[in-house]
Image (tube, rainbow, N blue to C red; front, top):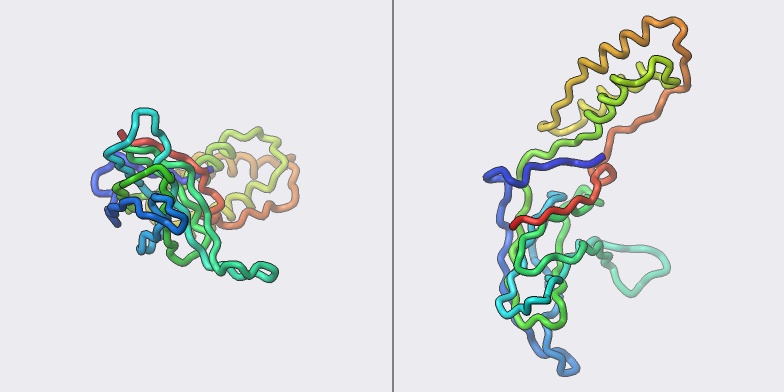
Length: 218
């Protein structure tokens, strides 16, 4: 259950920012690149991130990581009013496509954390603007279309819920329910089909249905 994109299509990636940073001396004399705010707001769950380090060594793999920033207010924790969701480590001198959970309806901000041994870097971030296809509905429809005739579930209720889900989705989701309709008709004409309690299938939330999938663009 996850959202699919077409990362290879032209025009689907919008360059949001290009940042060049150099190491600076910190409080205790240590020279490093301090974590920094990208100073942009993002709304897509798919980003492409490029890390370029000109003086990198052959055995360097880790290019740092991003963290989503959220406002945080909870009883019992007063040290900060922010919470962070860290991504996986990014690849150095490559472009990584990452999936970030949309935990809020509001846009999110990003911070970048570089390895302590970087003396300089160039960070580029693209935001996905193309079609996102939720495969949950198609997968569920295909399963029900080939389900055993004595499946002990309320298929009319599932069909009704699927209609609600599809209606609530954004454009770009294409689902053929003809096979499912035929299966439902076949089962409903069978008077011996046992009936069970209706299934409660709420409309899917993109943040819950997203499965973390990562790609590498050469």
